[in-house]
Length: 417
Length: 115
Picture 1 (cartoon, rainbow over the protein chains, first blue to last red):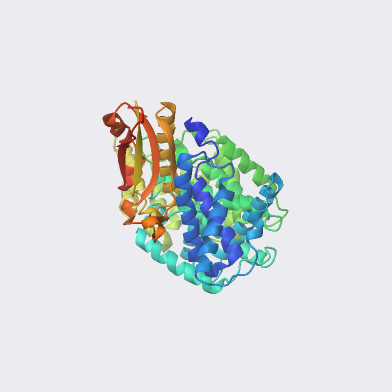
Picture 2 (picture 1 turned 120 degrees about the vertical axis):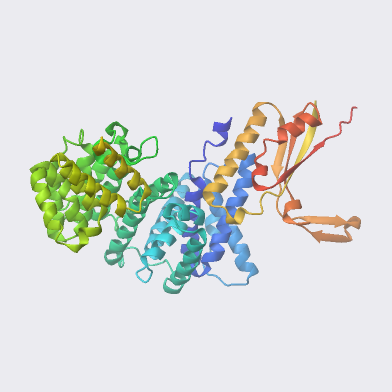
């Protein structure tokens, strides 16, 4: 009975519905009415909640919500005697056959894509771009965003209000053809999707369930892009592959006690092979003849990690080559530091330690947790336990991340015994 | 066995602050609760009510607009439930998800004609 009742109501139907309908209505009525649109959509959810508790939810929940929200909005706009253009009623008055249902979905996807580009408008700060994307496209609430980003709910609310005002000021209409200005904007959009994913993926803080949803939302947005003929660039597929490979390891990164598990000790049977396969598919679609993007290189590294039998039997040589390629394209201290892991595996601890000694000349690494953690790993392999311990202690003192602190303390304990 | 009318009041004051995810979760609790009643054969009828309405006085000489009182006092929906007695009906009402949001349930026996 319970199953039958909620048969059509997929997980996150409300949250996804919210994002879809807001985009659709902003596209139709313009960003100027953003607040009223949000209210109208929220009201449609309240109504759905009341009615669907008694009855079986409709087959197409989104179009039901869309109709209600649209009517709510028109009522409000009429009451406010605001003029608006366009005959929106016509879409809803016709009998919706299967074919039109498909068209409606296309229109919604199209407006969501346009909404992504609007939320990533270059005049908005990165923080605003993230909050807008999560709220208006993802359908996340302030509460959830605050929990995931470890911020206060009020500060998310404030930043959302400011971001909205800026958006309204700079974006008058979403009705810009997607193909225009795409190449310049696509890089920002990809960066924001990547940041969304990273926020969700970081083990540092926040509620795990919501964080996972943010990762999946980032993937969903990238999938939307990949399905559009103008936006479906190799970088989009590379980013998608990268996110799939990472997301595949989501469950393996934390053990039953909620403690962090590093790559070396992860239970690889927990990796999600369905996601890995999707990742491989996108990696194939991402192929470029020359000049692979940073997403390409990171995706390739992640591919080797996700598909390796175990830590030791990983394609360390290939991974090392990829890190070096990345460094040759653009220097980054983080990449240089991470390169030590495959370098250590390929050339041994002795040489890795020498590389790390060179690092100590650079001020960048003096306060870096990862630097000391890597140093400790290399030193303990060389049986220099006292030095390893002092490196670990430094790492523990430097980290502000509680999970990491627990993780490193465990390692220190193992060295002591 | 008698039928009982459940009147739901309140419990919706804070919906504007809830996230879509929370609303869906709450709704699914209602669905599960009512599904359970239906399975046990206790659910006779029920529907939600629209927020606004009218109150008609003096044969229509005075018609006021609803909502009629504070949000918490507006009837948001009703159910007709079958139970052994008043006590049993109250027992059934205890599982209602409306209590999560400070709402209440009024439980009234529906008088039978063939007494």
